[in-house]
Length: 382
Image (cartoon, rainbow, N blue to C red; front, side, top):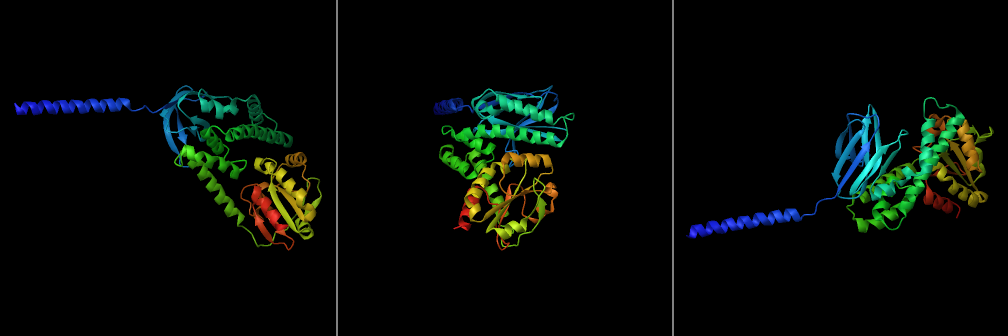
């Protein structure tokens, strides 16, 4: 009798535990899912994937095979973040922006190579520039200029530079608005990452740090933005330490009007000379020109000169960009781009770049940007 009671009790206990386990399993909230249905024309039997941080610590989230231009990717969403849709054809690797979020979206690749993603909140919002009529039109014009039958001359190259910068500007202005939207922290940080912390890294990081308490310091997009900021700061620090205290290296080169300019003449005649490296095709270089103009206006009469060196190899592009930017100081080039002996003489590892030279011919600073450059110039003239 006792054995029977114990057996019955044990059965009831196990049944109760099993029921409780099943109830707990059913009551667990289902993780939200993201689904992307896509069309990539002229692609078949090719692997396609969603990749988190493809240029850093890359992690493949899900993978599928394109069949006759169609694919479907589905994965769980732990955090709203920017990811990349990635596939390769031959030796060419293609990456396109996608926002990982709960919901279903459609990916479409246009003949120009522009992707359009629609169907869920963040993809519709953050990637909205892809459907902006002016962006689409400019993208179409850039595509035409890259075709084999397109004109290949200096004027055509200049027009291509202009259209490329116009397309870049439309996208940047759109994302900057999202960066400073003031309401959605996830969208703001994703925009910061997509902008690669431009146009003002310090101001952008204030937005990221303000979002961190809500999103959490362990948030992937917060960590990604901070890692990007750290890498850029370290690169700038390495560049800023070069050549300080060393003598400047002289050169004599023609300006946009063909008149020869000797750097030593500017150095000897002024308290400080800012040698600035730029190019017609360099978006950040041209974005900093208004700041240089402001410094020039404030300090030229006190002894500041600027000498710009263009890394162009297209004379027409250099001349037209110079005319468009209306530079008020000497502006020279040997049109040898990165093969120039001038570039090899100075710490130019990416542009914009600069060195500040005192009247004795010593380099006192290098590769300062933004507020750092402004503060250095102000300090030198106190």
